[in-house]
Length: 307
Image 1 (cartoon, one colour):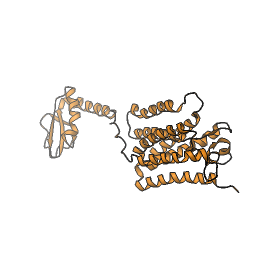
Image 2 (cartoon, helix red, strand yellow):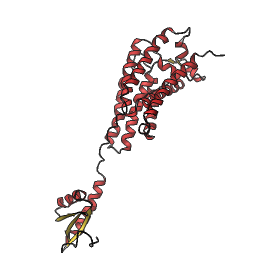
Image 3 (cartoon, helix red, strand yellow):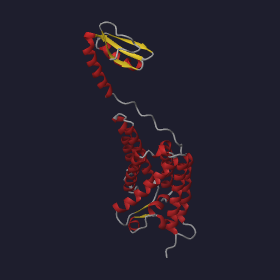
Image 4 (cartoon, helix red, strand yellow):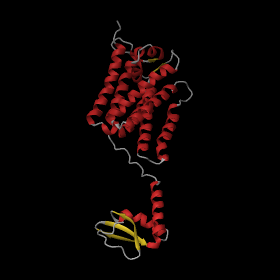
């Protein structure tokens, strides 16, 4: 140590073993020496603080400080702060509900002389032959009122929760993307005669987005492993409870699985790219508008008379 400084000369028989910017900076190290029974003193002035020990204790004190520093480096990192609330997403959830309610009678009875049900349902064979818009339009159709109400409840709930950390626009854009990708994937994994409708593929996509985006966020924050895997465990439990069906055959479990998987992949990408942090209010509004525009475009293509 350089003795020509504001602390002045060392007391006779003493050696400086540590210096910091303040008493707080050397406090824990001094406590480690105290715990080992090594006599020491702390000098403080405007330049900072230093720890002194008797000369014959210097080797042991230095070794103890090295061990303490190595141990401190392995201590658990503080829990990551919760993600900031970007949007409660209530307006977006209400818009989702209004869209589903509006399309329910249209899908059941048709409109403008057109059979919206047949033109919009997810037909595996027709998706494979290029009618990919059905992966989107099918999300807006429902078999009956029970089917509709169930998707309204859980879709709104998951959408509001996702919007808390991602923002409403990004959350619902990811929901639509996961649902469409899930339907498209299912069309290649199931029989060509398979058909499906309903927003549940997208809703489980929302769950997948929430699970993996939070998992990735905690990983970047270097949270303890238990906190990292907690979202994955919770997502698996929710999927098993809500998505596995009741054995009646009415529940399209494969669609739930493909939607959830698609959402999980999207959630990782969203977190890795820090999209929620980078997107401002205008970008969020733009994604919300894009979500509804994609649905409108898909239906326009579905109903447009072919040459």
